[in-house]
Figure (tube, rainbow, N blue to C red):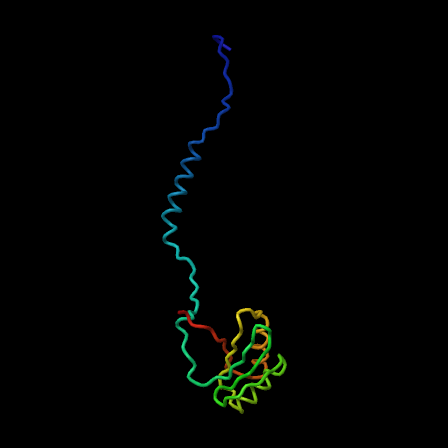
Amino acid sequence: MRGGRSRRAMSDINVVPYIDVMLVLLIIFMVAAPLTSPGTIDLPSVAKSSQAKEDPISVIVNADKSISVKDIKAGNERRATMREVAGIVQQMQGGDAQRPVVISGDRKVEYDTILQIMDGLQQQGIARVGLSVKPKG
């Protein structure tokens, strides 16, 4: 305490080094961000789908969950329950397990109903099962 002055402890924090570190990190991330490639998912497009060349067997699920199986080649159509679909499709295939089957579901039908039909067909050994979509346009 010479000369009447007392030394006081400095109570301020020097933030300049923190700002320097943050600016360096910002520059690093700004330079590195364009170099990273984001993951891309290649989704199939409805507009590019090809039409079936063979006459498929069509399983139609209406909005009221009623199911009908239609053989376009023979021109016959039968109503079915969930359990009967696979058997009727096998009869319509006539031993040709490679003949395609297309499931057409109304937009209001639950996804689970379509999956149950698809799973039942595949469990019965029906090899080519697909979903019918409306092309864009």
